[in-house]
Every structure is written in structure tokens, then in C-alpha cells.
Length: 106
Image (cartoon, rainbow, N blue to C red; front, side, top):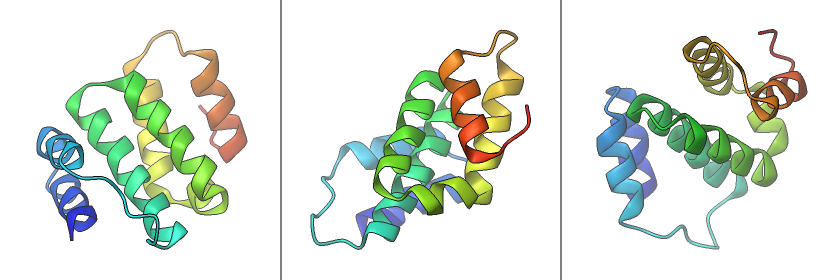
């Protein structure tokens, strides 16, 4: 249920609430990889909405480690990466590499 509460806050564009909710629990080792990967994708969006671009990208990298195919093709990942790139005049090398890996043109 905790995973869903983070996603629900992201759906409401409330990054701060999502980040706070994520701090209050630990993911179960028995959760399916797809669900855990989606959680990290949601949390990356939450950090982006919260204004923490560095943690957003780091969290996308975590999603990639857990569920690479899901992360590469998920529309929310694309939206988050493009938003991160638009917010920074000078894109970091790590953001550029991640976007290239995901097939996102910046």
C-alpha cells in the first residue's frame, strides 16, 4: 500500500508529499521487479516536482538498474528527462547519457 501512496501523490503533482511518503517505508524484497521499478520511476518524478533534480536523475538510474526495459520505454521517464533537461541550461553528462540510453532526443 505504501508504494501506491507515493504514486498517488505524484499523480496529483505533489512531489513533496510523495518524497515524504517514500521516506516512511522500506520496499519489500518480495515485491515484483516491475512494481519496484515503477516505484522508482514515480519517485524520480516526485523529486523532479520537489525541485531536487540531482536526486531525480539518481532515482531514474536506480529504476534502470532494477527494471531496464520498463525504464527505457516508460512515458513518465521520458517526460521527467525532458523536464530535467529544460530546467537546466547546461545539461549534465549523466543526464545526456541517460537520455541517449533511453532514446530521448534533447
